[in-house]
Image 1 (cartoon, chains in turn yellow, purple):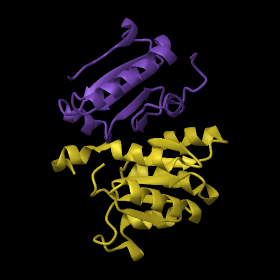
Image 2 (tube, chains in turn cyan, yellow; image 1 turned 45 degrees about the vertical axis):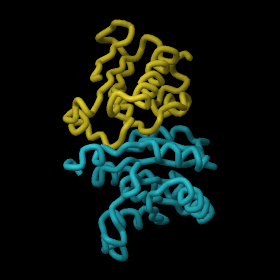
Image 3 (spheres, helix red, strand yellow; image 1 turned 120 degrees about the vertical axis):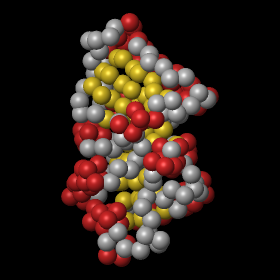
Image 4 (cartoon, each protein chain N blue to C red; image 1 turned 180 degrees about the horizontal axis):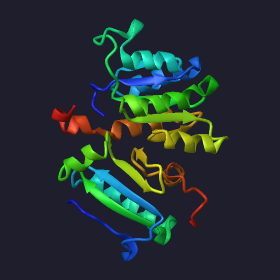
Length: 140
Length: 106
């Protein structure tokens, strides 16, 4: 994925955020944006409230969503993103409940990584992706 | 190469219908294609059909199917449609994403 593509990370666990920041800044050229819950993610994608400045908060080329957000927020968010903002969606979580992973794929998730996530593996996967709107810029 | 590959010579009757989107004829595309073909052959036996689409030769298809990233593996059947992105080299992850883990003999 090219360097222009911002990655939006929806993660409420502070430790996971710090680890992701550290690993991705080392292995990926992409800028990162972190939000902690479903509402913030929606606000970011809609450019509302503190995210209204698109120069400072550009739309993402890829999103990473933690399925472990409280109150099943992640599943509502996946459904909303699928309906409103087409973007490649990577999910993370604990696969203790495999039916939740299956539900995530049915709601539009495009990949799933078990926690604790091998962040080097995730970064490698992201770096190998080619975005269609970069292959065909006029379609962007 | 824009190819349409059907495994096991069956046009109909496959329980799992897949479409793989790649971009160009290059080693990465070839590796992805071989990986998915191997998964179909070894893990899904005669229950799987796969069609390979090169979006450089068929960009409209990617647009119609709302493909956002390459490579993408689309499961059309059984419904609902699922789209899986990534290098697709982790067989267990691909099978889980396809929702056929443990349902088809390995």
